[in-house]
Amino acid sequence: MMQRILVYILLIVAVVFLIKKYFFKSKKSKNCVTDCSCH
Image (cartoon, rainbow, N blue to C red; front, side, top):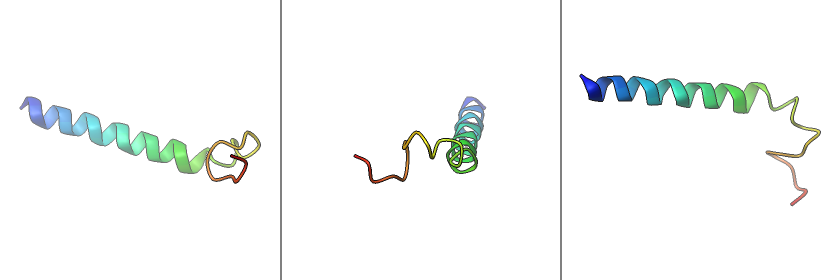
């Protein structure tokens, strides 16, 4: 049962991370954080 709970927690964390990465990309485009060639 504990393994199933851990799997669900990891799944939720991964989904939240992907949502933040893709949906909040437009707000962070000024900061040059992700897909920018300013390195």
